[in-house]
Amino acid sequence: MAKVVSPTSDVILYFLALFIPPLTVFFKRGLAADFWINILLWIFGWIPGVIHAWYVLSKARIVGG
Image (cartoon, rainbow, N blue to C red; front, side, top):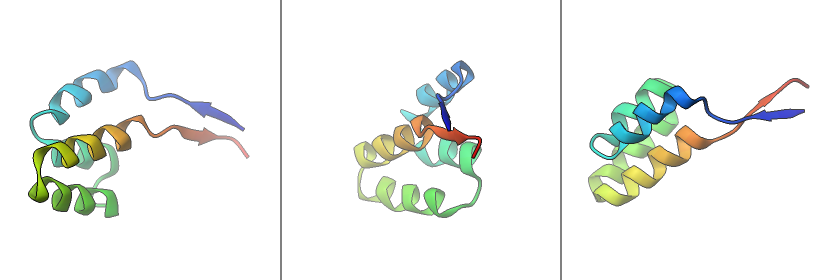
């Protein structure tokens, strides 16, 4: 199984995550659990929301198998 790193087009999402983390998670995952987790983290503080958004954006996808 090969891991695929997030594409360079995600650079815009990384930058946007600095300002509105839940929006970037929504663009990447939709209304999945990650979105709601990010909303809660963003309510608790800006930094946890940004860190979680960057984590979701950088999560490697497994291709094949």
